[in-house]
Amino acid sequence: MTGTHEHLFIRDMKVVNDDLDNEGPAIGEIRPANISDPFGLMRAADVPGAPVHMAYSWIGSTSDRVHWVNEHVHDYDEVLMWMGSDPANPHDLGGEISIDLEGENYRVTTTGSLYIPAGMRHCPLDFIRVDRPFQFIAMSMGGSYGSVGNS
Image 1 (spheres, rainbow, N blue to C red):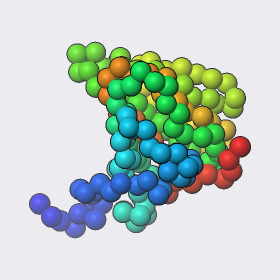
Image 2: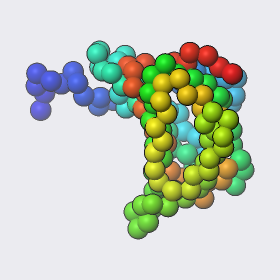
Image 3: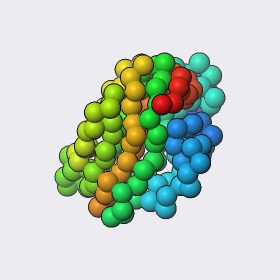
Image 4: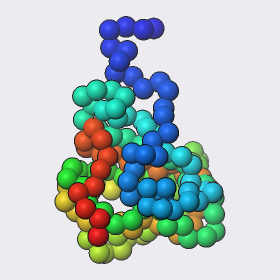
């Protein structure tokens, strides 16, 4: 059904490689074969006035460590989410992520999320191993994605 609020829906997600200035092609890297294109779940570019920018990618299986996002800072809050794909064990990520926050390294092996306050230096983000595909979602609390400075 189409109605008065149809303009608030995203029904045809776009590939948003150009939005993400700290990863992949934007940092001069060739997209690793195990990382899908990022798709825009919600952006001010698609829904004017939307106060969030959400993109997701599938992270495919690999036994190799894969670097993906360089260190950076935003002037808005961000939430990163990663979700395993085994419905019988939803807490098991099926892989291992490495991410730095203000120079401290953290490892993640469970489905979960991370709140990154505005101004916090974060990344690099690497996938240490991926035993089975999982989803990775980045939600920026601003209508567009951008950094205030790279380290």
